[in-house]
Image (cartoon, rainbow, N blue to C red; front, side, top):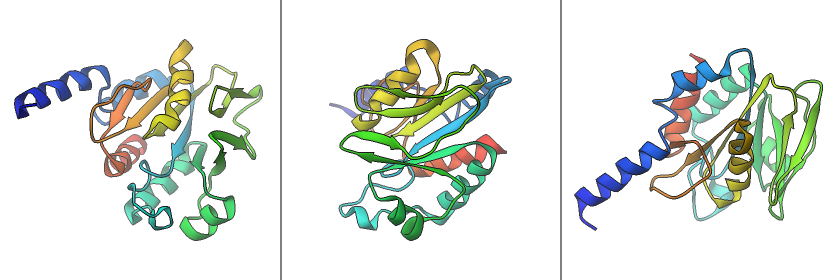
Amino acid sequence: MSFHRMMRAYHNWMLKYPSALTSIEQIVNNVKGKRIALFLDYDGTLSPIVDNPDHAFMSNAMRVAVRNVAKCFPTAIISGRSRERVLKKYFVLPILYLNSLVGYLYVSFCYLSSGTQVCRTERTILCLSSCKDVLPIYVGDDKTDEDAFMFLTEGNRGYGILVTPAPKESSAYYSLRDPSEVCVCFITFIA
């Protein structure tokens, strides 16, 4: 495929999955009277994908950005690692921790507001409030996040943000290219 075709294909893909960075104003306008709840995948979203998962670390800038966004909004980090490993080895933040095992997220604790419910999709359990005053935003990078994206898209329940350097089909509403854009998005969002 020629460079121009690739650029045209990427441009068309961006029309379908606009950048969350350039859509911050639209997202904020849709918040109106709602509380945001963030669900963040770890590998490929908060840290770059690496060959050895034990070497997947957030940058210092990302650590600060996640800490600051977690001070503003209920925030869940989603990882297949044990809670102890995540909290001791990687970071200590004021966050809710969800452990993904065998393709499912097991909710250890979640309280967003009265009426909180656990919604189970085919491969994901997502802790969401049935109240209309919560806007969930799920940020992830691969097919394991698609059920959450689909759940949020159906019924206009919230937003999925796909983190990917290359165009691919998704049920997410927005996109970001890599963890550095996720970091900038968090900083911009709370500014």
